[in-house]
Image 1 (cartoon, one colour):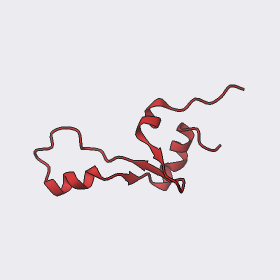
Image 2 (tube, rainbow, N blue to C red; image 1 turned 90 degrees about the horizontal axis):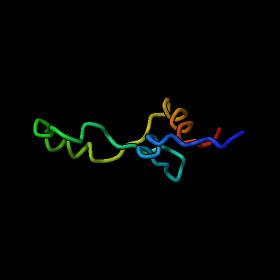
Image 3 (cartoon, rainbow, N blue to C red; image 1 turned 45 degrees about the horizontal axis):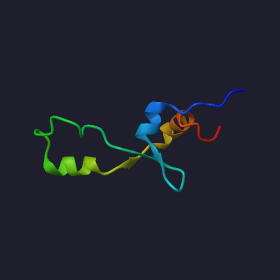
Image 4 (cartoon, one colour; image 1 turned 30 degrees about the horizontal axis):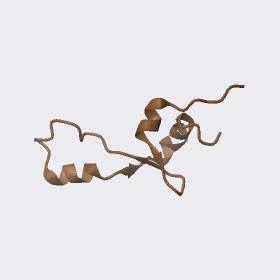
Amino acid sequence: MPKMKTHSGAKKRFTLTGTGKIKRKHAYKRHILTKMSTTQKRRLTKSGLVDSTNESLIKKLLTIGK
C-alpha cells in the first residue's frame, strides 16, 4: 500500500505542540479591520488550540497516528 500524503491545506494551517495538541490561528484578521476594535484585533493575533472534537479529523489530514 502506498504512503499516505499529508493534506497541503492542513499542513499550512496547523502545527503540533510538544504535548501533541494542535495549534491554529484565529480567523477574521486579514482585511476590513477598521470596524474592529483594537482589543479585538489584539486577541485575534494570538494563536489558539483546536477543539478536541475536531482534533482526530485534523490529525488524519496531517497523517499523524492512525
